[in-house]
Image 1 (cartoon, rainbow, N blue to C red):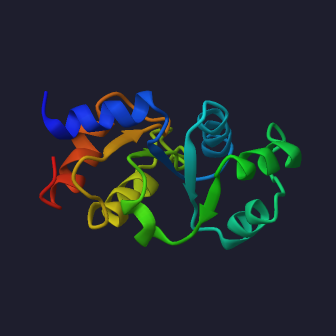
Image 2 (cartoon, helix red, strand yellow; image 1 turned 135 degrees about the horizontal axis):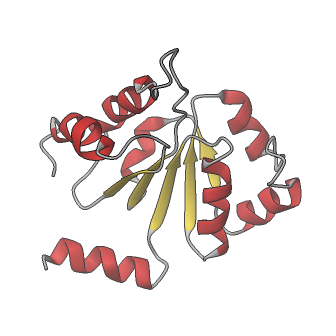
Length: 154
């Protein structure tokens, strides 16, 4: 195991790792809540400035996540941003973007592809990237990984 991997695992075990969640919708915001409740500082990313503003004010737009929960998350270090240049801050980045179905009932990969492209130039060595979006098996290896590896990172 490399020193980078050892450091990453130590940061996870000690809860010093920062978790980034991209897409603060009905999957991403509850996932951010779980990591926050587990003791991790969470940095949430969304392209919708209204969602970022609401969360910054301690309000929620997701039925399963109350305003009180958002406020508690903020008290534990949760922050929402639309500034994707901050992607170098989290140690782990979880992609939770929509995958609507096309007319042929296949997942529309546009959001996953665009997100992978947007983050590929902003990642740093030692970060873990996880695809949480609902899609077909192999999407991480076949779609995300080639885009992310254009940055020179593995």
